[in-house]
Image (cartoon, rainbow, N blue to C red; front, side):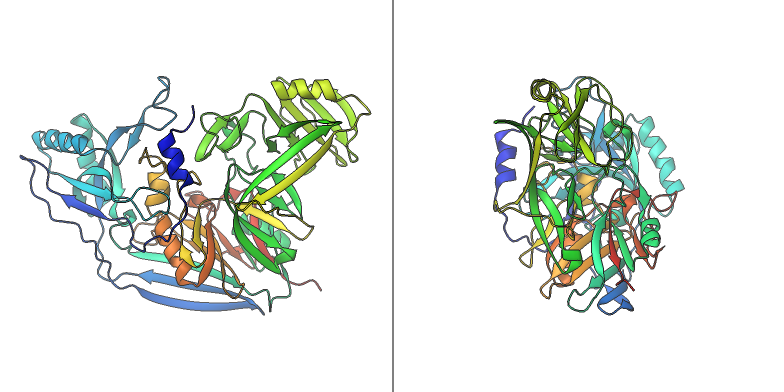
Length: 543
């Protein structure tokens, strides 16, 4: 299924300056017999800031701040989930049931009336769109909530009553809502000045793109000064090969994964001597004589594209966060950094030596040779390989990376790339292209709602006008502790640091910062620091 013209127009809209207003939620009075409800407080109180600074080396500082809003009181509440849909599930009768926090006014009013009839006291709240540069503005929809409780157990009792009334509730902490200031936000900011720092900065997958490791473990192994988690990666085997990146990634000048559409990436040049943030795309081509075929992936399972964004993928050829797309006619290249058993299944596999000569043609499987690489093809890609690959023949693979202006980006040995989404700051202005980078869907507000519009742990990277690299983490999902940022708040914070460019990296349970090999923030997973795909490491100068 393809995107509708309306979505396409939204995604193609030019970036404009985003306003500083966060998403606003107002309580509204429902129709009789609903009780009147006071408006929610939308005026933020002044934050107190407590900063501390640690100098790790000339040109490398870690600044820690606790942002607090005195007098703010949050509570547990019960949110009623509306039957929801996504673009791909709306036409799929076999799609699992989905639920949305925000829906139409008719649904909200009807739900509130039924809850009132069941002896409960609901409130209807309108939800506004955040100030995304390419998204809708104004009213997003309405949600229904019941009660305000001091403890989760108290809220659970009311949640059971809501379930008995025939609805699908969830427990919510109001401190995660963007309409009220957070209780507290614990932030770590690493500032690296390439004019003073004599070490190096690099993105790394630690030599094996199929290996997951915690940020602090990689930092300790490399003896780095500072490390943060990097881009989006595959977690579950249903979505590809765990550990591999779901976006463009390059390490020591070698492209190890391809872009999924045009998405933000941090390009680190010459070991950190310079850096830039840009939306990047990638093209890889296999050539045999005068004929060619487009390679659609590097180091991923053929036919499975996490976050979509490749030509021919369904249900979307555009990037779509946390959605796994399919591609029937698929050619994938595997490099020596893929240090695991190769995917098996229908199709053809061609092993190439270091010069690009065909060493073998056969079934998919085995391992990548240390001095060569492998091409796997399915569907028409398999037919092309069968027709063009003979032992001793040559297949040349070429790569091209381009920014949004069409300019080619060349990679050299000291360069690295890490990618996520979306852009937060551009040319010194807040510029969140949430729709274009596939983290929201303007026609389906429930898609990405909690991911983008609710406070979460986040990792960000930016550059200030002096060329300093800013690596930032904010803890989240800690009720009464640190509640995180929305995307809008992340952009506002990066701008407040003086960032003229910034992007959102992987967040949630992946968010981690290590200093001298030890994690210094508080990761949100109950099991502790999460093993991730790639990381960004600040390495001291060698002896």
